[in-house]
Image (cartoon, rainbow, N blue to C red; front, side, top):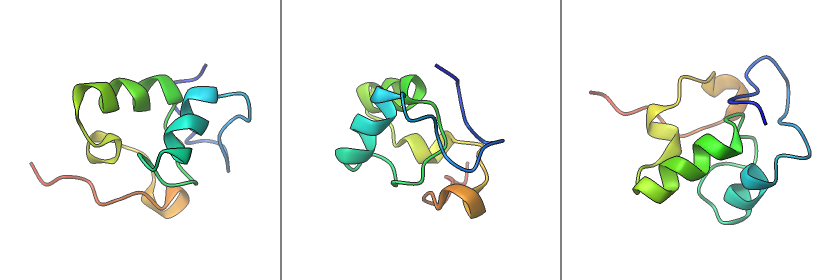
Length: 67
């Protein structure tokens, strides 16, 4: 699997971890972050959108944390 799909308009259909994260509401349906990274953040108890460097205008993700 890819670490992200930022160059694409949508994630690969075979990224089952990302699909599961979307269904469970961890990330928006339009998320372009790779499923393995998303699930790793979820397991750590972190919001995957907070550290994501992806283009919000493409993924419609939550605001990045101001650190």
